[in-house]
Amino acid sequence: MPRCDEGPGAAAATYVLGVDVGSTVLRCHVYDKAATVRGTSCKKIETLHPHLGWVELDPEVLWTQFTDVIKETVQAAGLQTNQIAGLGISTQRGTFITWNKKTGKPFHNFISWQDLRASQLVNSWNSSLILKVIRTVFTVLHFLTQSSRYLTASNLTFTTQHVSLRLSWILKNITEVQQAANANNCCFGTIDTWLLYKLTKGSVYATDYSNASSTGLFEPFQMCWSSNLSRLLSIPMSIYPPVEDTNHSFGSVDPDIFGLPIPITALVADQQAAMFGQCCFHAGDVKLTMGTGTFWDVNTGNQLHMSRGGLYPLIGWKIGKEVVFLAEGNTSDTGSTIKWAKELDLFTSVEDTSRMAQSVADSEGVCFVPSFSGLQAPVNDPYACASFMGLKPTTTRNHLIRAMLESVAFRNKQLYDPVKEVRLPLTTIRADGGVSNNSFIMQMTSDLINKKIDKPINTDMSCLGAAFLAGLGLGFWTDKEQLKKLRRTEIVFEPQRDSGEYKLAMDNWIKGVQRSLNWYSHASHEWKNSLF
Image 1 (cartoon, rainbow, N blue to C red):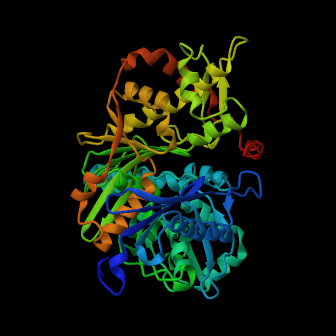
Image 2: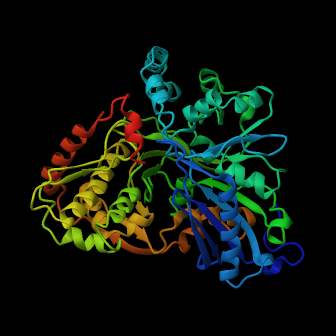
Image 3: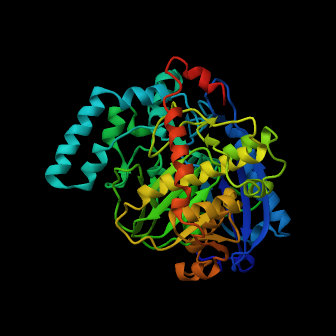
């Protein structure tokens, strides 16, 4: 792979682009060698809701926004295209599309990871006899062999967030897709794959290990697409893209798009990108991202961690022979909860929420369950409802806001408990994402888990991680040790109150969660979906 300082005119190529296609915002930063942001641009991700509970993205709108933010970022930095050494792309996970291999035309819109159309299919599979048999067989095999691979299969559970059953739904319900798949004329891809295909005008079709492992269709032990799971769900193996290293030379952007070719040297899933941007390179390093959802990730080194507590094993990144694995727990409704409260005019500015929460001694017994998209691990109930409980005539907006912020911290505690089961000393906890700017949530989380939490100056870690990975591949940065020196801490939150002081409030909140479970029957699930 050519270095960034080689080739005609390349001496001026002293900047790297990092683009993050998030769940709510598409953002691009251009970085210099000190990892300082020299220019930026962002666009709001527009979601479509064609039916109750369905969440889609228009691929052509997304493509236009993607190219626009890159052009605007380069312009905002006062740069020319020939000064860009390379491009790294971070994308939301589990959002996918299928398209015609011959024409490149999509068969449908992107199906978002937030989409609930397969929820009944998920519930049906999880309660099916065949899955019970599979779990039982692999539980016995694990007992006899103690193989981690069998432990994974013994805990097999489907969720709507994974691609698997949403893709199965598409194949069953869109005849054109099934026919194309049968004729070996169907391409499947998450957002990274589609963007790469578009940027290279169809000449490159691929994904990376971090994105592949986040679909629920990838076998991390064998480092390949799962033939067994695909066969179980009747998904043809022919539709999957080749899987490459995370900072692979994926080719160059077609010169017609930006005027000059730009090397594409990293594709990475957003949470893994944030992990890399936070320089969580060592086993035991922990990242807490609070954006649209909350994601706890722990670096488990070169060992896959099999969990009974709700953590999901992922590939963090693959760089040459180095493969780093993560264990992850997540919840869907964090920033989305705060956004909802703002739309109800419960507050004027997000910056006001910490002050509002701190203006009252407690929530006055009010609790909030953040479950607009059901509850994920360790609860795992897609039919749970979002709710306020314990309202009184004396309840004020400040009490409501405090209850909502507390719910985020309580979910953080709930997700951190399984993280502790990882048999590694948890050394560093680093936070990022927009909600990490909320000091009330950050301090309460630190108190509840009794750990220091380090928040960086720049919380857009997915952009930075994508740029770091691209830059390493180009020789723009030399190694991870250099990257560590570029990360800057803004504040470290340290425990200030004993976690026991929150016991009464958290017990009350857990009681509220229990009463929210299975709120929507299968028959009334469509009415629930109308909330979205």
